[in-house]
Each structure stands twice: as structure tokens, then as C-alpha cells.
Length: 351
Ligand code: IPM
Ligand code: MG
Image (cartoon, rainbow, N blue to C red; front, side, top):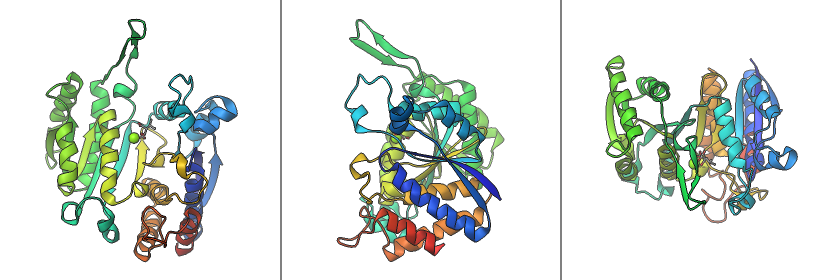
């Protein structure tokens, strides 16, 4: 198969972890006789520095024309500490999600048998956890009306959803549940928010089309609690943008390291694959960041392209690396940490 993949390394540790993912994907292509053409494009603070725009039109064109997009991370501390900055790297990410129509963010959380004891949660709480969040990604408070009034003394952000937006996300949730354990949890705050009541009403109306799926409705605060108490009781969870942002960070610690958790952002056409961690600027250039989340994101990409064996080859290699202790410092026992590049080399050689 010939594949054109847009490569958006971004900022901080983005370029390092992306390099490892490219190496691993090239090893897969070699083994299974595919031809991958990587098309690098600018994004984030790197793009602001180069062309003054965190998601330039050239990058958008490259992404639109690609079979998939592999993305590192964006963000730079010099913007975090400057609330008056006019252009921020994160705007590039939001623009990219919106312009590419990436309305569903798929964030799985699972445990690795060899890492269960690295989790801050007790073994008996997390064993068997295998859940997926479907976070709505192009609506809600992230994209609602916002502003200042009262000479800047009052600020507001609004959370808006249309029934259609809820339906298309929920449809993906039901379909995913059908391919898994047939349990769907709709996470909302319907006891307070009108937008949540629209979510609940919309999902309830769809239940009849998926009679095999057991649907539960839970308030977001209760889910935040149950997620660390009994994560292994969940299967598929659907939720709006901001709730999903918060809960997926919480869920990521279950596995033992945020450096392991992949994600996919899917929409109508091209999909994007990225680690759920950020740009981790403190580690940039030090060869210490864990590349596995990006590499496992590439596995999700192969899965979605219908290349299941290729995806499995990557996951098997990662499992072996974890078992053999070929891991970066976030997972290593004292004095045994491998570098980012060494982990990438090992995985590529293994494949
Ligand atoms: C994420 C990130 C982004 C978000 C930031 C960087 C804008 O936290 O992908 O979860 O809030 O969506
Ligand atoms: Mg986040």
C-alpha cells in the first residue's frame, strides 16, 4: 500500500517522539511491504516562529491531502506565562481540529500487565481496565462565544451544542460499544446544564437503534470519582469537549504513565493520531521522553487504515519492550532508564 502521511512534529518533545514513531512505522512498512511517504509540515510555536501562524494554510493543505496525520505535541512555556500573547500555539491545535472536522477524539485507557504496579492506584482497583473515551472535539465551551464586559472586569465563555453535533459523536460511541463490550456511559451534568440536558435527551432517543447496548447516564463529578475507584467497570464513555479534556488526563494515570497513552481524532475525512501528553518542555532535547504514546498512536493509525497486522506488530513490540524493561525514565527502575532514541531503535529492530 502507498501511504501519504502528514507529519506534524510541533514543539517541545514533539520532534523527538515523532522521530521514533517514524522509525517504527518505517520498520513496519519494510516488513509488510508498504511505501510510506512522510510529508512534514509546520505547527505550534515552531510555526509561529517561522511564519507567524500556529496552523498555516500550507499545513492545512498537506493534512487535507494526506491519508492520515501523525502529530507530536504543541505548546511552549513562553506563551503560557504571557496572557497577553496574541497568537498561541494551542490556537493552532484548535484551528486544526475545527478545519479538518475532527469532531471525535478517541482516547483509550488500558493497563499493561507488566506495569500494573507502576500505577498510583492499587492493583485490585485497576486490573482489567480497558475503556475508551470519545470526547467531542469541535464544539462546546472551547468554541463558544466568549468575551469581556464591564471594562474587562467580567469574562465569559459559553458552552453551546447542537443536536446534530451530539448525534454524530454519540453514533460513533454506540458503534464503538457494539464492537466492544456493549456498554455506553453518557457523561454529563444534566442536573445543572441545559447543554447536558440536550446531550442526554439526544442519546436517549438513539438508544432504540442499538438495543444490544446498555446505556448509563452519569454526572461528570461522579464519573471523576468512579474512574479512580472502579475504572474496570467502564467500557465506552462519551462526553463533551471540556469534561473529556479533564477526565482523559485523569484516566491516563491509571496505566502508570501518561507517556503510554495514544489517541486518534476522527471526523469525516482524514484522521489525526497523537499522544495524549503535551509538549513537556522541561524534557525537550534531553532524550528522556517516552516515545511509546506516539508509537501506539501510529498503531491506532494502522488499525484505522485497515492494517490490523501492522498495528499488532507495533503493540507486540511495545509489550515486549515493557516486559524486558526497555523503557524511559518515567517507567524505569532506578539506574536502568533507556533514552528516547534507544527505545525507538529497539522497537524498530524488534519489528
Ligand atoms: C488536549 C490538550 C488541549 C486541549 C490543549 C493543548 C488546548 O489539553 O489535547 O487534551 O485542551 O484540548
Ligand atoms: Mg488535555
